[in-house]
Length: 442
Image (cartoon, rainbow, N blue to C red; front, side, top):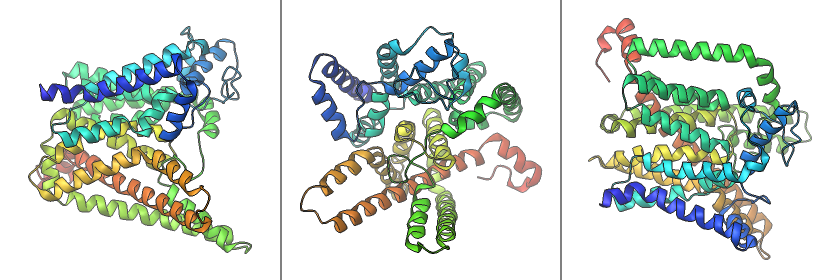
């Protein structure tokens, strides 16, 4: 009975909050609704589900023959479209901006129901961490905007569930992941799990994926290139997460300190590039160090198939987005896939591994609540009587700790993905060809 309660706890609590907020917006005081979101670290728009509204606006304008990649007058903010042309091709679906509320509400509802498919927590401590992640600013932000990443998360979740089944069903899951990748590119990292297949199946699947990507590029490469400049970018100290945030902002600080000297741009680039390279080296060193722990690799091998698959999918997606460029905070919903595996590792008998997994899980939850803490601190520092210098220094300290937290979590995730790759049949096959003595060695 307790395990069943734990399995549906995240979905149940999420639904209660979601339906309560929906009722408050529809039937209650909208100012209270906005105050709650603002306190949460979310700047509310004048209506919910803003992001899915933009994607529905793409369909609406595309049916009218408008070039939505240049500008989208059907969108309330007239945002140009920067994602896959495949979504534009689906504009035959008779949905538009007027359907925003229904589509957004159903999408969020399916997302919350899908959380019951994740491996459940096993004890009260794990339950608290899972609920904290489910109700975090990242997740609430994604739901409040009904961002398409919610749909892609559901598709990734479906891929993971189908990966437990027979070959035909697994292939169907890979197809779902491929469609998700063609819709918004970054879900390509979900297909990392194809490496778990035996060599012949892996080769066949990769051939189909490569052919599909080639055909997609041939058909849409002009529109893809046109959309790249519109991809979201922003300051390095907001809710955007990326590998570039820490080194590039410090690089900008170094450049500003060197002004008005003509060497300022050079100093900025040297500091930014040097710190970026240093952080990457440190991250790989941490990853290598973690993989040297036999207990960690044994703990990863002891995970259930579903725990391992979701841990790898979530780790691959988050790490891939981290290094590919800036991502808005709501993409952190994929942390929900990572937590079950990390928490399962904490059940090992090794104290070091328990500390590693629990500590990393706590850091993930704190990162998911990052905007709540950041904006709360900023509001506190802006109160009368707080010295500007002290407030500025504390803001920098918070940002630095947050960014270092990101680099630590990414290092752990890289270790997870690297262990998965090393244990894959294709890597064993490669090792048998080049290093026969390494066959069977992990």
